[in-house]
Image 1 (tube, rainbow, N blue to C red):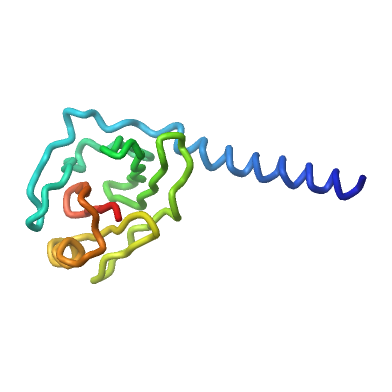
Image 2 (cartoon, one colour):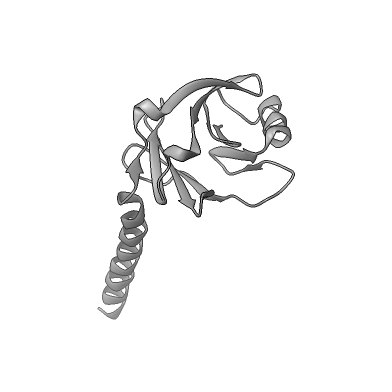
Length: 142
């Protein structure tokens, strides 16, 4: 009986932690379709969003795959990217934007910042056909 209560309490704790993680994403503001344009970036057609269209906090855009890309924006800078499926289940770990000279990848997507870094990312075999850019920061889906 003690084991059953322990398992039940652990399950409730995990569910509470997951719902808290979803709360911040649920408060995200969708980027208007009118703010998303097709643009050539580093010889690749991407969905481009001017960073001026982003609001402080969490933003998101719907991808052609049906997945959702969340963009955390603070102090006029992109802080992180998180990918979820259409049901809101997180796909891989979020990628935190850190100044570097190399692009970064998770299981589901890669991010870059700056022309040289993004050119490297787009010319390797890490990217699938879909990508989005927010000013000089881009993300591609693997």
